Amino acid sequence: MEEKLIKIAVLVSGGGTNLGALIGAQRDGVIKHGRISLVVSSSPKAYALQRAYEAGIPAAIVKKSDYKEEGAFEGALIGVLERAGIELVVLAGFMCILGESFTKRYENRIINVHPSLIPSFCGKGFYGLKVHEAALSYGVKVTGATVHFVNEIPDGGKIIMQKSVKVREGDTPETLQKRVMEQAEWKILPRATEKVCAAMLKEKRQGEKGHERIRNKTDKLPS
Image 1: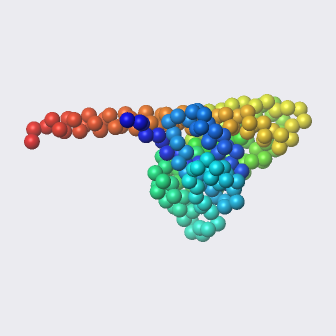
Image 2: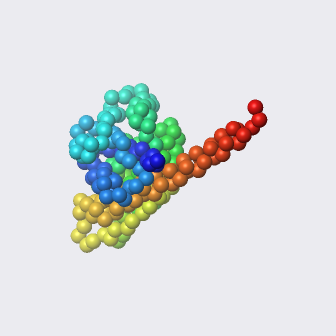
Image 3: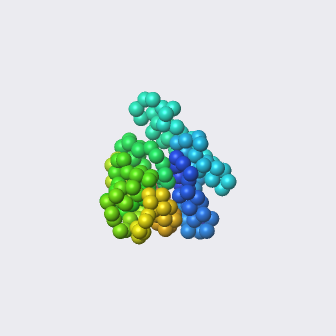
């Protein structure tokens, strides 16, 4: 019997280049233990939705501005994920900070890619070009990308994988951003996703074996 794969949701807000890398990695067999089952966008204009459509992946839109009450946005997001049976959440350019109620619910089941070598140039306020502007302003010679677990602290979760990228003379935030994406983000996000999916499946198998042993013992009890 074919083993069930981990159901993945990719959360996006913009162009979806990292989503594209994940879709390509799934197609090429890099991601073997998981399957992208849903794409959720915080914006109806995100090109990432087109990428999902072309790949035949179901998509949903959950706009934060549609929810005024505290916790309502995350509640709506959780509802969408649970209806799809999502087990792993991958943040790929998702421009909304998720609160503790959400991160606790998916503890060790949310990963994010950040365009720097954490703990450098990370945390609240560091996103997109701002990260690369800060790196160039500081004068670092090496930057890169990090995939990490997500908790209630922005960019504060345990690191899963990192890859370094050299800063070149004459780099602009735009050229550096492009190179970090191509040489680091698009490489390590799929690999980290596969690593986490494989670990989750192993844990599920161990849990199922434990339940099976208990059932077998129960069946043998005298009636």
